[in-house]
Length: 224
Image (tube, rainbow, N blue to C red; front, side):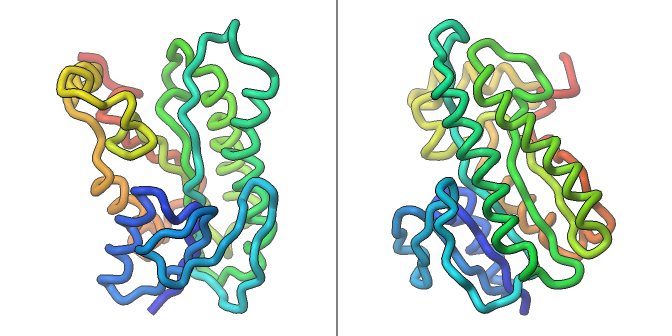
């Protein structure tokens, strides 16, 4: 049995990934800012403000889930908007790793999250692309610094069926419009992302670090 730490553990992806990991006999310790009935071992914390609990366990992996989808025209964005994006996506991940990386076992794996919008320029994405671009840079830098003890990889999805994205997928017409933008003509699923998280945390990816895994229906690399 291995032990993993999920930060932002009330997200749809975290819930599904936790189910998969517990089915294979692993333990997941959860930190979230809002209690969720899926997590009886809930520990309250705030990843942005660096209010993290002390945990005695050592870990075989850490996943930082918190993120945001702030889409606004560049002209209407204020410096506080960019700061908020940077704090939740980048500083939250940094604070988490500074707190817990010393508790990680040999061969541990870190999983962070980016977005397809870093690779593909999109209107109204300047704030989130700025922050997630920093996450990708952080991924590569920490993969080098933590090697060979700890692996660090990042998942860069396109729009996925989650609560955070529901306003963009709130009708069959919107879902179809989003699907048609992707070469594979469908919207991402939480189930697929969860399986990818499990893969990156597992020994099956033991020779993989510093990589950005593009789970985006081909949007970042294929034109049809």
